[in-house]
Amino acid sequence: MRKIICLLLTLCLLPMAATAESESALPETLRVSETIETQTLTGSVYVNTAYPHTANADVDAELAALLDAMRERAMPSLPAKAANAKEGAYLDVQPSVYRTGESWMSFLSTAIIRNKRQQTYVDFDARAYDIATGKRLTLHDVLSDEAGWAIVGDAVREQLAAYFPDETAAEVSLKSKSSPAALEFTGFTLDTAYLKLHYRADSLYPGHNTLMHVRIPYTALSGHLTAEAARQTDNSRRKLIALTYDDGPVVGRTMRVVRNLRAGGANATFFIVGERIAYGPDEVTLVHDAGFDIASHNWKHVYKNQNRGKVIQYLNKLNAELYKYIGIGVRIMRAPGGHEQIFIDENVNLPLIHWSTISKSKDNKVPDPAAEARRLARGAKDGDIILLHDIYTGTDKMAQTLPGLLADAGFLCVTVEEMFAAKGLELKPNEVYWDTRGNESKH
Image 1 (cartoon, helix red, strand yellow):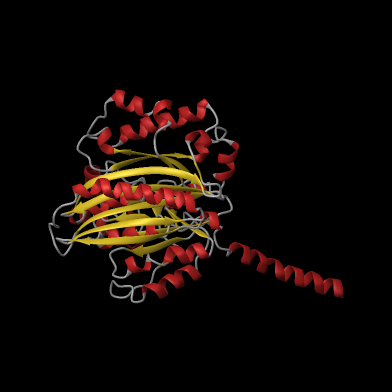
Image 2: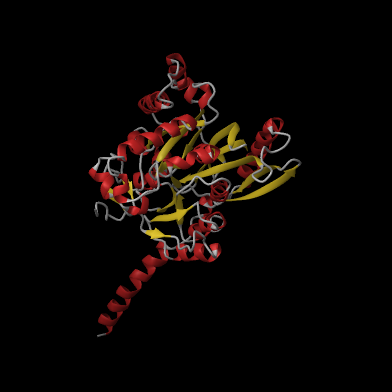
C-alpha cells in the first residue's frame, strides 16, 4: 500500500515539476533591458538614446560608446525645428535585440531621424556577442566551411537583388557584397531561427533612405555551422511567443510601440492596412529598419464579401506601396476580423495568421495597460500568437511592461515567421494558423 501511495505522489508531483521548469525565467545570459534617455531640444525636436543592460558589463560599455557615437554623427542632420510641433521631430538611437541558444545575443542598432512623417536619416550597426564571455562574434564563429560561406553569399546576392523590384542593382555591386571578403566585414545578427545580414539600401539603390535585411534559416546552414554555433542555434526547448499588432500604421503610436518593444528586448510582427501607409510612411520604414516584420492586413480593413473579386488587387496595391518605402512586399497576412475564407477562395497565396490570444480593449482603448499586460503574461503558452492593436490607445504603454513579464515567465518575444521557423514548422500559402501547437488548417 505504501508503495502505491508513493507512486501516486510521484505521478502527481511530475506535472508540477514540469510546469515549474516551463515557467522558469530566461537565463541571465539572455536577459536584457534598455534605459532610454531623452533630450528635449528647441523647436519640438527630441533625441532618444536607449542603452542596453545585459549580464555582461563590458558588452554594455562597448554598446554605450557605439550608441553615443551614432547619436553624435546624426545630430548635425537634425532639423532646427519640427515641421509639425504637435508631432515633433525625433532622433531615435536604439538597438533591437536578438537572442539564441544559451548566451548569444545580437544588436541591430539604428539611428533614425523622422520629421514631417518622413524618415530623413538612417545609420546602423549590427553585431553579435557571447554574453557569457563578452566575446564579439564573427562569421567565422558561425560558419565552419566554404560551403557555408557560399550559401550565405548566394542568399545575399539573391535577396538584395529582389529589393525594389522596379529598379536594378548593378551586378558588380551585388557580386562584391556577396564575396567572402565582403561578408567578413558585414554586420549580422542571430535570432532563434535566422542568420541575418544588414545593409543600407542606398548602397545598391540610390535615393532609398532605409535598410535591407537578408535572412538565412539555420536549417539551410545545417552541416555548415561550427560546433558552438550548432549548439547556440538550437532553440528547440526555448519558449517562444509572437506579438502581433493590427490596423496600423498610426502616427506616433506605432513609433512608441516599436520603441518600447525594443527597450524590452522584444520583436514583433505588424499587420498593416495598406491605405493607411500614406498617413505614416515613416512609421512603416521605422518598423522595417528596426528589424520587425511587416505583414498584410489587407489594403482596406473590410470584411468577408466586401473583398470579393478584389483580393489580388488589394494585395498588389499594398505591395506596390511598400516597394516605395522599404523595397519588399509581404510574406504573410491576417484577414480583417479573422475571416480567412474569401482570401483562400481567391488564392491570396499567403499563409493566413489567426491568433490564439487577443488583448482586451474597450472603445478602441486599453483601459489599464499594466493590468492587461499582466493578464496576457499569466495566460501565455509556448507558441501563442497574441493579437494587439497599435491603433488602440494604451497599447504603446502596455509594450513597456509586457516583454519583461513574458521574459520573467521564460518567453522570448519573436516574429510570427521566426517562431514557426524555430519550431521547424512550414507556413504554407492559403493555410490558417492559430499557434504552433498543431492546430493549423482549421478553416
